Image 1 (cartoon, rainbow, N blue to C red):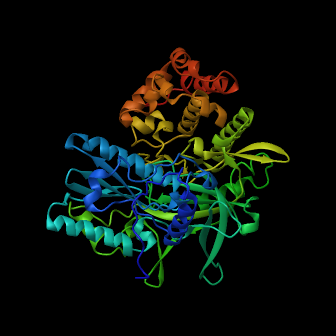
Image 2 (tube, rainbow, N blue to C red):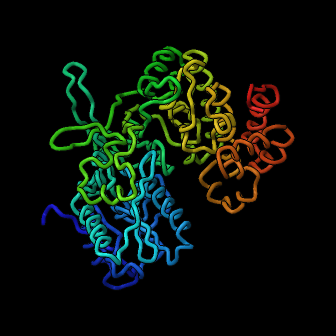
Image 3 (cartoon, rainbow, N blue to C red):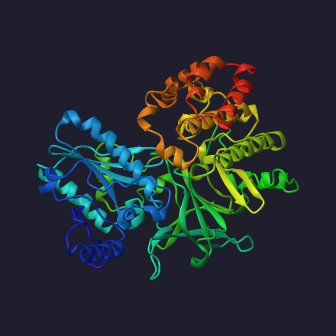
Length: 529
């Protein structure tokens, strides 16, 4: 039927075959038209599957650098265990596969996965705040085979949003383009009439890709309003799943409102007016359901899905509707720069970090705004004819510095490696401006250890990181990480010999030592030690 899509196995193509060019061309056209490539095999072929049922691509934040044109069309991952003893490792690999899907597929809302162990299959859905797992599907029984077939049929018939894709972000090709680009729809409300109007932005580059399995899955796209100007972006489009409420106050954080406050506060100051992104518009992402637009939230993940898939997940007693914890939002900002991880000049990174430190302090001093989400993704480098500067972003967790409305950060930054000590060992306590600077210290330490520029990070042996004390900052439970940070930052001598010693020599290491002295050698916070 015309309303069905083709469910394909992962092809084992030989690139050395003489006829491979023609076959690849036809196959790619088919995959692009279908929009979806399913990587699951028939039940009789399950034992012949390799460890991973879909091609895993090198992690990249660039659309044009993806290894294969069909990479953005993969629906799900499957992991195979030959024995029950291997099952736990398989589940861990499947979670890493889902994380890679979020990173490489910039229109991924949630991710499907399957584990196959002997005669048993389980289905998984990885959402922003939860992982739903089905009961055991026994493919040797008639009921189990019916359940599996029902799931595969659902994947064939479901709309793309029910497969986990975002229909408002589409990969596209034109007659002249070699690589796919992105079409990003944004719904903006007319202030006079209150009606929604859709505008499409075009992007060839994802400045910041989703970097975690759960959480906001925030992405930044360098975009423009026309195909012809994609190489010269005019706006930064942020796509993220933000909390509907946060902290003790229960208020919904709103990055658009925060940016408006900062812009009004610093519009007439040359020093800080360009240190924060300038807001163009912001609002929720909408999905079309039954000829009407509905706001995309965590609870809409399974809404509209054919009967089979929810039944698969409900078999284990899971709440397939999930919790309404997050809302899918899109924020349009004036072009603000690139992520510091793509910098080629270490001096530019140092300038950007210094500007971010100044912006953190200015936002607190003048507006009493705490950032609460400092990471290497929160600092952009802006390069103009006037020089290089840093831009402070990721303000969707920013909060007012009011002790009575302090932010409980137990669900905050998914990049826990940059979280301050109190956030890890006492998440019930409110945040302070010192926590933001402490997070910035950890960003500096990791950049200084693993490399500031792309070339330095490419040359860094990741296996070496396992032997360094800084590895303990991201290992174990949150309490373990907090205790490790407390130990290695407790004394300047310990910090210098165990952390700073392994950083690249230069200004960044000097900055880390100076910031450590300010935070830990002279300032002691109640409850930190």
